[in-house]
Image (tube, rainbow, N blue to C red; front, side, top):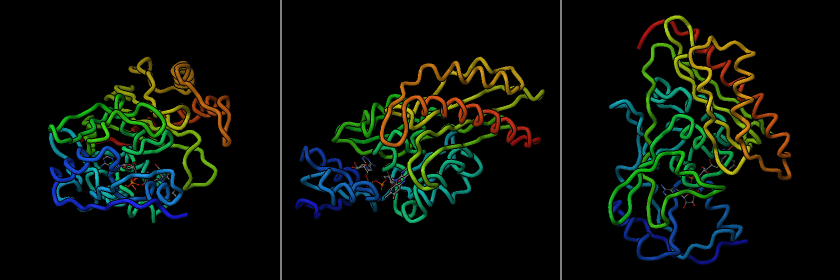
Amino acid sequence: MKPVPFRYVRPSSLHEACAALGADEDARVIAGGQTLVPMLAMRLARPSTLVDIARLPGLSGVAAQDGVVRIGATTRQVEAERSDAVARDLPLLAAALPWVGHPPTRNRGTVGGSCANADPSAEIPLVAVTLEAEMEAQEEGGAFSIPADEFFIGPMLTALPPTAILTAVRFPIWREARVGVAFHEISARRSDFAFVSAAGQVALDAEGRLARVSLGIGGVGDRPVKLDVAALAGSRAEPEAVTAAVAAACEVLEATSDLHASADYRRRVARVLGTRAVLDAAADAQKKDSGR
Ligand SMILES: Cc1cc2nc3c(=O)[nH]c(=O)nc-3n(C[C@H](O)[C@H](O)[C@H](O)COP(=O)(O)OP(=O)(O)OC[C@H]3O[C@@H](n4cnc5c(N)ncnc54)[C@H](O)[C@@H]3O)c2cc1C
């Protein structure tokens, strides 16, 4: 099949791009095209105009400053994967990125495109929710930002107005001396979307107790979810305690059934991968013995 005819514009500024979106309610942004182009080819997307933001100045790049790693929306996933700042200050994203599709899709797919696309199984949105990232956006009226847990509102649905462009994602940096991470997922093949995924990040205090724990689960319901595992703070991440806390936290998950996996399977795997993510993140943190 071929796409339905559309107009193609490549604006030279963010202002022009927002104006093009504001002028046509059926216009759509294209960034890396890894999701949108197949949807066009299958006629599942029928925009009147494509607004190409891939080469817009100022929308790409990774910078660590003021306690956050700020990743421009059009930063290609491969650039984030190879970034020193991501490796040093955002190890959870570094652990998740190799799970995002294949090397060829990461060569073109963008960090912002993955977030704007909001697939419930996508890894980058899961990391954004787990770490409580802020999503920066721009529309004709000005710039604004949305917390990640309010940004993802359903399968392929975000709180971003259709006239707005996601411009960057700000991930907070954890400054504790001993931070550990783990990312796990189950999928049919390594590069496929996850049936269930779990992202864990912990910080240990000087006595080896959990000072902070963040755990997010993806693929189970209609969006990535951050679980409440605060009960573990102050503990030594003993397997029994972690298993019980993660199982209790997973009660809130609303699981979906589809051709790939039943809701029951997804709930069960969420408990297993969630537990594994916290324990492995704690073990990772144990290996770090010097401050930043
Ligand atoms: C074979 C294959 C396997 C894949 N496997 C995975 C996987 O395992 N995990 C995973 O997470 N992804 C996977 N993907 C998807 C891939 O990572 C895409 O890169 C990503 O979903 C979309 O990024 P993009 O830059 O290509 O966006 P595009 O395809 O250009 O756009 C996607 C959507 O987001 C909108 N959009 C894009 N950028 C912005 C912006 N800045 N502001 C507002 N709206 C915007 C577009 O209008 C469109 O609706 C896979 C893709 C393929 C083809």
